[in-house]
Image (tube, rainbow, N blue to C red):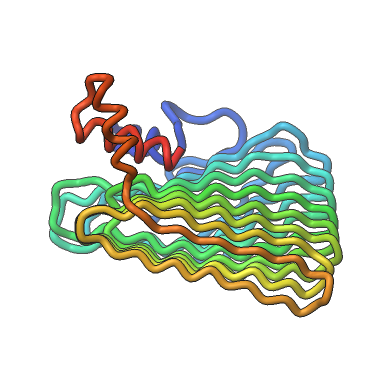
Amino acid sequence: MDQLTKTILEQVADLHDIPQGAYNIRQDGQSAGRRSTENIIIQPKKDKPGIDILIKPNTKNESVHIPVVVTQSGLTDLVYNHFEVGENADVLIVAGCGVHNDGSKASRHDGIHTFHIGKNAKLRYVEKHYGQGEGSGERILNPTTVIEMEEGAYCEMEMVQIKGVDSTKRETSAKLKAGAKLIMIEKLMTHGRQEAVSNMDIELNGPDSVTQIISRSVAKEDSIQIFHPKAIGNERCRAHVQCDSIIMDRAKISSIPEIAANHPEAEIVHEAAIGRINNDQLLKLQTFGLTAEEAESVIVEGFLS
């Protein structure tokens, strides 16, 4: 890997070299390296770009890394990945995409990920998005995530947009069976004239299914953010939707949490808050010797951590 690729992989997947265990690295629309293990099989799709990740039942304490790197200006990369997590497995999946654009044409990656999480399986999924480069061409990332959870399954997904992404539209949907639990954590920062849209539809279809949706964002300068998370209770279930945002400069944020109950024992709560950085916090940090800009950076970093 060249230094540029290594730098991007450090940002989106915390990788400093080829990872241990199973991995698939995609660069500029092509596979740049792949390895399966005894319990985690990675296979290229035959009918369209992308891979199938097959995690055997009862696989424990293993991980798979599937980062994407785009370095060509003007490239549009579309990939379809399917994750099959076997019953009673307990695994970590580290994804993420970094776009470096030094040219004048837009560089774009659209990742369509589908998950089937087996009975009593546990999955932690981390996906980071990052953009860089000195060119005027846009850096565009549009992820689609579709999740199906069997009885007793547990899934925690952390979706992070670090910086440098000019446009993103995230579409997420999930269907939960009895006793399944889904935790969705979204962290996002925009600046300049960047735009971000995030739509979520979580269906709680089985008795005692649970979901928690947590969205935290910071919008700076002239950026625009729109959030529309929706929790739908079709059985006895519990759901909590929480959206918190810091707005700065001339930015605009719309937060539209939605809840729907189609069963008398569905317990669903939502809350949303948008506000500026507290002046008392800024002043307190400045008394420790920080400049106003440094104090602001500390508060934003802490809010998104």
